[in-house]
Amino acid sequence: MNDMLRVKYAKYTLLDGSTRELVQKVADGSIITRFDKTPVPEEPTNVVCPHFLELKWANGCPYNCAWCYLQGTFRFTGKQPRIKDYDKIAKHVETFLSNGSQPEILNTGELAVSLLSEKTDNPFSKFMIPTFEKQSKHKILFLTKSTNIGNLLKIDKHDTVILSFSMNALPVAEKWEKAPKVEDRIKAAKQVADAGYEVRIRIDPMVPVFEWEEYYVDLVDRIFGSFVPERITLGSLRGLQSTINNSKDRSWVKFLSEKSNWGKKIDTDTRYAMYKRIIDYLKDGYDYQKVALCKETVDMWNRLGMDYKKIKCNCVW
Image (cartoon, rainbow, N blue to C red; front, top):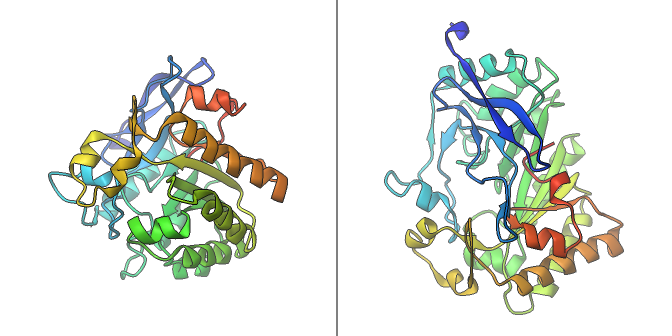
């Protein structure tokens, strides 16, 4: 039956200016499709975001972070978690894995928290990881704030799995992120890292609250006091208009004063100060330089002396 599903390719311009024929979607794109909403940047104010593959196995999130863009994405249907049919997911994934495309990372956390089903009778991790482990070319990325890692710790073979935990400064998370405590997220990340998983960290969205420098330095110390992540991606508070319009708590919007082609942002000088402080602290304090930016402008990459054309951020190789 897998033979009935068609893998569609399209020609994409990459961040380095080259073009390549890549998978655009499998069948109707309801399960696997390329995130290509961000055009290749042409202006200094354009945001940088490489086009990655989404594995859309579910929609929604059980948490209630004030700035969650799913509020705008699912404004008509609500963002309560809805898991798709596992048989359909399996057919689409198996079709992709056997179609001979170049190595890809499939992101399970763009439209849902990747570990949302871990407390159910049929957790997604136990269902999908063995499928990926039958091959070695492609990887699967789980992005989460969840601490429900019990099933992951019971899976012995996980060479094709990347886990990415979203973190924030403690006061920021406490005020605006209705999710597990940051300290508990760090503990969970350490446990899966100790179990041999590749673990990445997103510090995103950074918010310039009073004494932000102290709080984000503290976050870095907490992370590195537990384990060393494979890479770190930094991002700052931003808001698409649809997200802002559908937010119940808009107290965070006051930090946004600039416009980009990916919604409103914190002013450039403040963003630069936050990124530079943490990048410098990682380098000077921990000799750590595997850092990238999320949905940041060309101007910001250049100002920080970073080459966006060689980006190694959360969602790519």
